[in-house]
Length: 150
Image 1 (cartoon, rainbow, N blue to C red):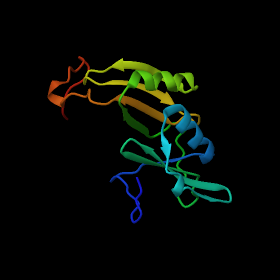
Image 2: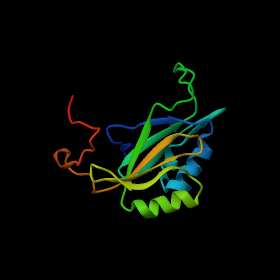
Image 3: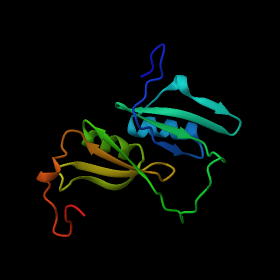
Image 4: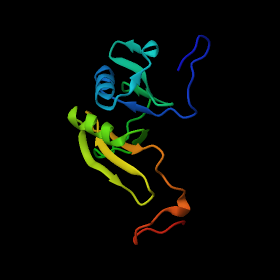
């Protein structure tokens, strides 16, 4: 949250590039329930920069910036945003009913957590996780094909 004197941010703020930032903001607010910091939105001819509050976190959404070189990745996304929520099942129901492309429905993991995965309207990857379920690493029930450490 911003106060009168300072723009308050967490230590890490990932940025996602969208072809249409206003549409992305509407979609992410409607489908995932995130909240825009409306007072911080910047717009210019052909572009936009905005911030979404997700719990105690912040994500920046931006139009393409020609100062960053484009690296071809053959259509593969090189990142995923993980978000913790209080009630994964109701979050999933909302996202699904609003048309999110569901990659995998809510499922329990070997680490004790519960997650689902979805793609947004521009095919960016989002992993939604139930807050307060992830166990300490020494308590994970690793499947036979995984080993701990190097």
